[in-house]
Amino acid sequence: MIRIILVLVGLLMSLSSLADKLPPKTLGVFVYPHFELLDVFGPLEMFGSLPDKIKIVIIAEHPGRVKSDQGTAIYAETDLQHAPHLDYLFIPGGFGSRQLVSDKAVLSWIKQRADKADLVFSVCTGSALLAKAGVLDHHRATTNKKAFQWVTEQGPDVQWVKHARWVEDGKFITSSGVAAGTDMSLQVIARLYGMKTSERVANGAEYIWNKDPAKDPFAIK
Image (cartoon, rainbow, N blue to C red; front, side, top):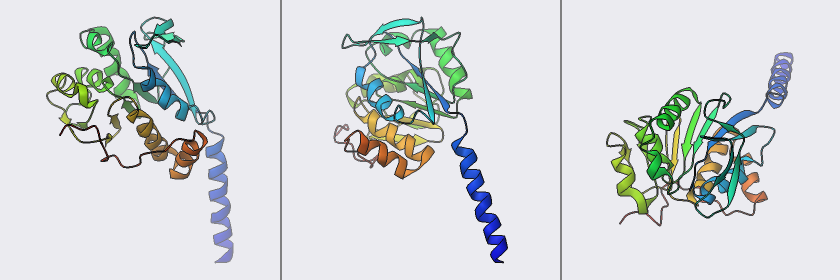
C-alpha cells in the first residue's frame, strides 16, 4: 500500500512539473479608437504578472498606435486578419464601442474568435460588442451601469444582470464599468490558476480585490 501511495505521489509531482512547462496561453485584447484606458490596463496589470502562463497580444483593425478615450495610445501588434489563435478573448469598453456595434466585419471577427476561445471576457461596454455579435444570447451578463440601457439594447436575447460587479456564465465573464474589470480579471486568474495565485497577484499590485461579484455599489437602484 505504501509503495502504491509513493508511486501516486510521484505521478502527481510529475504531472505538476509537466504543467509548469506547458507553453503560455494566448490572451488576445481587441482595442479600438476611444477604448477606455483602465478597462485595458487594469486587467493587463494582473494578467501581465503571469508571463509564464499568459502571453498577451494586442489586436486592432489595423496594427500600430490606437488612441484611448483619454488620449493615451497603445500599440497594436497585429490586425484582425493576422491575429494568432486565441485561447482567451478580451473585449474592453469605451465610447468607441458605440460605433463598432454597426461594424459587421468587426462583429463577425468577434463571433468567430469567441466561438473558438476557451474563455471570453469583457469590461464595461465591451459586452455590447459581444452581445451585438450574438455570442451572449441566452447567457447572463452585465455591463457599465451608466450605459446599461444602451448596452442592453444591443442584445435583447441576453439575460442582463442589473446588480453585479461581474457575471460568470460558462466561458463568458462580463464585468461592470472600468475599475470592475480589474476585479473580474483576478477572478479569471483564480478560476484558471487558483485563489492563491490570484491573491498573490493582487497583493503584488497592492490592490484591494473585491471578491464578491454581487457587491456592486454602482448598480441601478
